[in-house]
Image (cartoon, rainbow, N blue to C red; front, top):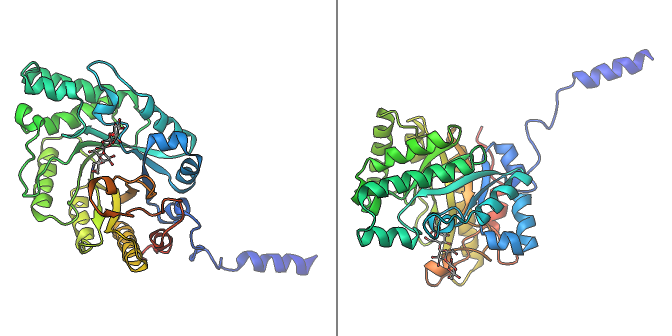
Length: 346
Ligand code: G3I
């Protein structure tokens, strides 16, 4: 009896060998657990409904989701006062069942606005005061509907031009620059627990855009406006250099107290696909993850679609594609393997 007790004591006293070196993750969910970074994907709702392999893979791999189109204004209110929530509801319900958090995308944008709104502003039947009421009602209605179910909202999307000036949208032209502060305040009132983000593309490297966006954040903070995060869309292409200063840019926003997220990562290439291009693409994905890992405030990395079967890229950039982690048949590409191999810096 005694030797057994001694042996047991020795075993219990021994240091835990493998704890500091966890096994390589078997999928993105495990990578997320090991790194503490939420890993998400934009979701095509039609595919979610119709394709069981798409659905299974999405739910196996990702613990965060964004509606690629279903929460945009033209999707949720195609006719004035007629709300079509079915697709957005499908995503939010599916996320709850599959233990995924949700990024709401997007409340204020200049694209994918319903025709009744843009036409009404253009022909003067909607005046500026009414437009402001319409925007407030839109934000309030949508944020309230999903109160408690959306972790983070892209409140304003792409509000700065490449040259650092404010983008000339119907919002700026008719409501003045104060529309941004209003949007954040209205969203916060509708769901005080949701994290509220400003989101943009080319913010990874474009200096004028970075400086203006930093100024917007500082000004909002000075006015006591509830802004909690910055989203870097991260639409990259291997024909351009990787944005090597990205982690530093993330840090500048983190220093203002903001959460940082990569919200729409993809890495396109000129077709045809070659093994060399796929290898280069893999380094871009793993560098993005490594950059996020190197900044404590970076809490989420979301890809803009996870499969080349459903990607916005070929429809928008002629002759380009293959931008996602998995191919059309949902087979993992080198980029997927490269992500699993990324290590948290010690
Ligand atoms: O809804 C119609 C459908 O009825 C029709 O059958 C189909 C035929 O092409 O078109 C459908 O609309 C398309 C819509 O996506 C929904 O699929 C539009 O033509 C198409 O232009 C639209 O593209 C979306 C794009 O935003 C529009 O601005 C992309 O899917 C979506 O990936 C893209 O996402 C944006 C982010 O929101 C913001 N950041 C940039 C990113 C990439 O452009």
